[in-house]
Length: 100
Figure 1: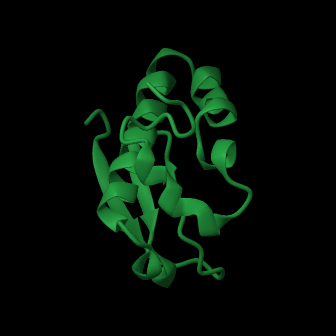
Figure 2: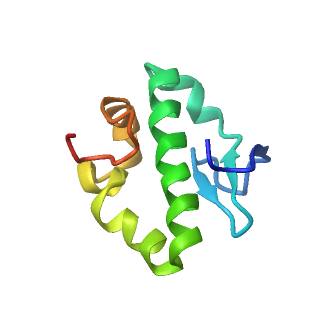
């Protein structure tokens, strides 16, 4: 994995299952109670961590490329709401919504 660290961070004022990559290459997973309700959680996390690793790699080359990744290969490419997070497990390569 290209990221330096994976951190679980405390819940924000909104209990949402969120994952972000910071400027230093750390993947941060929000400690939401909603993760527990997801089916195939391990498959979802493989896809999400692969996706965030792509962000880290692209940011090393060009920050704009990393930002553009979410326009073509993220949960928003296949869903309109967070209830569709389990669909991510179909894309273990991290390019969510793109079949390779």
